[in-house]
Amino acid sequence: MNKLLSVALIVVLVLGAGVAAMAASLDSRTLPVSLRILPFARVDVPENLDFGEINFADGFARRTAKTNILLYTNDNVHLSIDSAGWDQAKFNGWQNWVSYQYALQSGNILSWHAGSGHGGWGDYGFNFTGAPIVIPFEARFQATAEDWWEAQAGSYSDTLTITVSAR
Image (tube, rainbow, N blue to C red; front, side, top):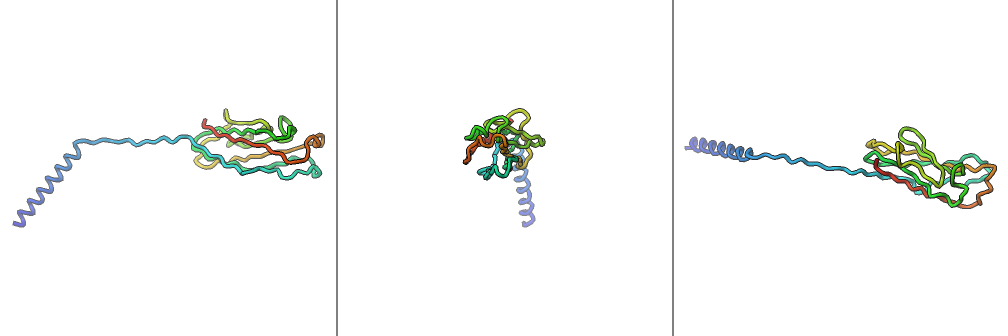
């Protein structure tokens, strides 16, 4: 009897497994899963870039204020930097006292004068690297012995707007 029950149980299990296997194989589908990551960028800059106090008694050599701009991006991007202009006209414009520059990934240097901007088009961009991009940035101040008296002593400021766009 036990032998008969064992055989019957095995037959039921085999038939049940076969029916389940047949039912599962009657239909099969695939479901593709996809996503699209949109371009995104973030720029980190210091709160302030300061030339410090400039004393013309120390001479008229170029003074620089340097920092790194950190660019985080998941795509190839353009970078433009625009100067609103100093609140002292002598600092703005071509061949005046203040200029700016930064380095591209290629090592080329982009420079421009205060009161204008540069970049944001053409080959003046940065390619995706999968890591933060360090951009050396420099502000330059240089008065001359021939015109240093044209700017009154005091505090002055400029505001730079840094814009990143996908290319």
